[in-house]
View 1 (cartoon, one colour):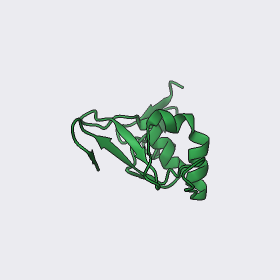
View 2: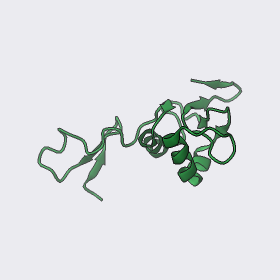
View 3: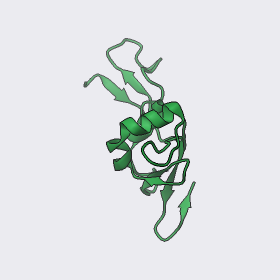
Length: 113
């Protein structure tokens, strides 16, 4: 996979192609989405990582029913989160909706957006 390149805006490129910088393989490969409505946005946000840039503040997911989920939890329960996002499920038990907002928290302060 040495031929794949992720740009600073989160686009994925295949450098084996002659015009590789003209068109990305995936425009939204690794990027933090503040609001997530699709599984593509969920995966891109997970790839971007659990810290905000700049500042390095930890990020977490807020579900439709108000629950806070860590990146580790969403990764571990990805199938359920993806199912919820695809089917707009928000039952608050088995499939917490991941049609959510992504928040960061500063030390000693409440969540900001």
